[in-house]
Every structure is written in C-alpha cells, then in structure tokens.
Image (cartoon, rainbow, N blue to C red; front, side, top):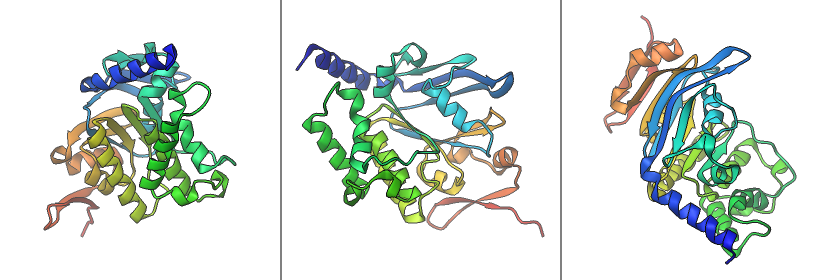
Length: 274
C-alpha cells in the first residue's frame, strides 16, 4: 500500500468516526443575478436519518442540493459535514463524503458496470482494485441490475438509468447522499424496492440521505423528517407527527387532509369541497 493510499484510507476512516456530527446547514442564501433563490435555509440531518425536501416546482430544491455539495457558491451561510466546512474541503474529500444524483442524468455509450465503477474513483488513482469491482457487483445485484451490467446506458429506459445513477452513488460509500427526485422515472414496484433498500442502507451504514420528492405519500412512508420549501424559504422542518394540512397547503397552495389507515399508515389526499 502506497503512502497516498494509506492517507486516503486514514481520511475515510476519520470521516466515518465523525459522522456522529451529521450535516449542519446554517443560514444559506443563494441568488442568480440578484434574484434570490434560497433565503436563510437552516436544518440538520443526523446519521441514520432520511430527510425529504418537499416543495413545488421552482421552490429551490435542486439549487439547495447544489449548494450543499459545493457545486454552487452560496451568497451566505455554512454547510458542515462531519464537523468540517464543505466550502473549505478539497474536491477529493467532497467526492468521498458526498454522493449527488441530479434530476437529469445523461445517457452515454458507457456500460452500466463502468458507469457504476466511476463511483469508486475517489478511492483509486490509476486502476480499480479487486475490492472496487466486488463493490460494484454487490450493488448491481442488490438493485437488480446485474443482468444489465454490460449494456450501454443509452440503451436503457429512464427508470433503469435512474437506478444506475443511484447504484453509482451508493457504491461511492459516502457519508451523505443527495438525491434529487431519485424515483421520478420509476414505476411503483421499483419505487418501493429502491426506497426500501435506501432506508436499509442508511440505517446499516449510519449515513445520511437528503432527497427531494413530489409524491408526499411516498415521502411519508420512507422519510424520517420533512423539510418544506416555498419560494426558497423553509416553511417547516418536522417529523411525521408535525406535518399538518395547513403547512402543506401553505407550501403547495392546495387544501389537503391527512388521514391514518387502520394499519397506522399516514396518507395525504386533496380536500374536496362539497
């Protein structure tokens, strides 16, 4: 093992030990050409926790994700992960700590296996090791993608490409997963399978996941907490028992009702007027 490899392993081990500090977002502002997109956004995420970011189109969800991983430069505010300021971290460190899956994923001639293997790139310099190949094989099997391993991405459906992007994020073994509408192209069976596996992974590895979703009922089933955004401002940061019809109506402009089934499952429906 080279000195560089030993240092990389030491950095990763240190990060794992410090995940008890979680993600701490404080007073984040962002604007495009003096047009405010995010205003004073603050929240925390604990290790082992999934937070769903809810809000209508244009509420700032995607912009928030790109501010969290440093792709966009904040006008104000601080993002700390594992106790470290993300803005002061090297690109290599951020690549090991944070995995980001955007809404739009480019379909290329790259094979599924090679696309997922790119998630291991922060851990090797020139060539992948046997453990990297084994990690890819495990995640492909877990997401039922093994039969697609040698198929080019540009020959997959939108839902299959979305699963490949999630596989690449998971094989990266980050402390924080940022998933922007990760199930938008998936059918109901695959939504349930992917989100169930995501929840298991977050618990097993004691990592964090922040994901944006449009389906509130799916979010309620799998998320631990909800961050509600309206026009770039936090309207609510609550657990399931703190989610109210008034809060949802304030965010979406739609009157709703919250019900609990006889199996103690909570669901939201539109409130119909007589």
